[in-house]
Amino acid sequence: MIHQYKLNGYNIVLDVNSGSVHCVDDVAYDIIRIFCVQKESGGDVDRESVKREILNAYVDRLDVTPAEIDETIDDIEQLTADEKLFAPDIYEPDAGLLKARRTEVKALCLHVAHTCNLSCSYCFASQGKFHGERALMSAETARRAIDFLIENSGNHVNLEIDFFGGEPLMNYNVIKETVRYARSVEKEKGKNFRFTLTTNGVGINDEVIAFANQEMNNVVLSLDGRREIHDRLRRFPDGRGSYDLILPKFRKMVEARGDREYYMRGTFTHANTDFTEDLFHMADLGFDRLSMEPVVCAPDEPYALTEEDLPEIFEQYEILAKDMLRREREGRPIVFYHYMLDLTGGPCIYKRISGCGSGTEYFAVTPWGDLYPCHQFVGEEAFKMGDIWNGVTRPDIREEFKQCNVYAREACRDCWARLYCSGGCAANAYHGTGSVKGVYDYGCRIFRKRIECAVMIKVAEALGDV
Image 1 (cartoon, rainbow, N blue to C red):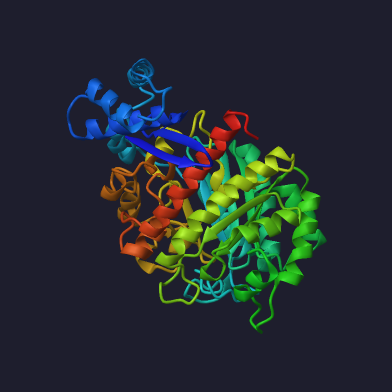
Image 2 (cartoon, rainbow, N blue to C red; image 1 turned 90 degrees about the horizontal axis):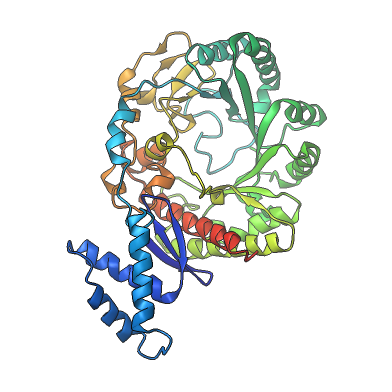
């Protein structure tokens, strides 16, 4: 399978199955396009008909000669023989084997607080309550979650804990106790814990900053961008915006973090489809590690993204990619989470096919110790898989999530981006289609655009155009 597109002056050809990326001239681009058409018709490539079509298309170009066309076709055929173009799909036969393999847990999302000090309109967690009661996780439950992870992690050494909510800092003492306990047993158990804190920033103070910078491998800080955009939906229960309170806290935390990982994590909605302005606002404030997610919500919400928004959203991703190259040339680069792409190796075959591991390698834990496939399923009682004391008592749910891969979804089979997204988000699929093996088409289209932009940035860097 081949995907071709033009962006920022580059003719890009992506060979889906091998992951090879080629930047070619106009003639090669069109020859490959003709190859694709002829191969899709089921026959062999007719070299002479390719030459005739190219010569007719470039009749006014004196530099496009039969000899040059022959040379380009030879190059394409050699790349095909080397399985860097039109490569066979070697992954599909492994899909069934990977689905059948025993899975071990390596990450937990600890919902230490099902409550929040903000009342964000678009919150998928219903202002932190997850459609249930407000609650804080006890230290005893958190310690048992650590033990559950260790007991079910098999040979995994590196284990991950994400402190999540609601707003996790509303249960800060339990966070500290949980980290202390995990550190006290990790050497004995032969494990290494990595912690992440996701916070709206309201509860950040000097003590939190010092603790997070000592213990948290990553912090995710929620900021939607410009004051008027952020305060439109991220408000206190009394209606006050939160921008002016949290921005100084975020700047102080990031400055103190030095070179340790963090991300400014925003959400864009129908109100700010020009979301690059929000990303540039954050970059100009000194934040250089950014993420911006499209809102996922009921279509009748006033802030829901619409079909009519897509052309501008696509344009915004291109604007961002080009500006990132400009900033890199100027020596002040920024990182955008969705443009992080390794073309030299990429994800392992297991991740390419099976995705994020929700419901198999990764669980969300509620304040009461219940297990769900991930944080976006918490509150959906049909997906309660068990608890941290008795383990997985609904293996049928785990088996269903094992089936969530690119080859189990018919809509993914002909998608050129399938080995980058691994079938997409099961929660978005479920909430959009009613099935974890469905496809959230709107999100798919946005994802494909992001990958096109990410690949273009890598092409520009490889060619030294930065």
